Length: 66
Image (cartoon, rainbow, N blue to C red):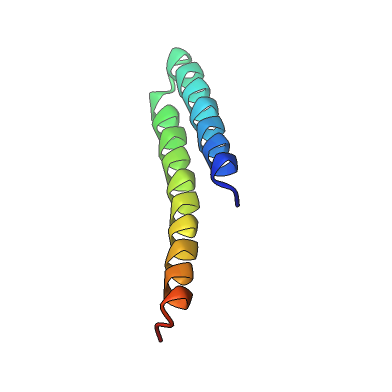
């Protein structure tokens, strides 16, 4: 996955989550808005964790660890 591609995915998720949160808050459903925000944070964290796992795998193979 390209760095710019990941950046656009994170930005897109952030925009969608913020719009959904605002719509739900205006509709009086703040709890669901908070759940949408939490789900967005979890999705972004999973993307970042996958990126870090690939980075550590690259470092491990580069230095012939294990």
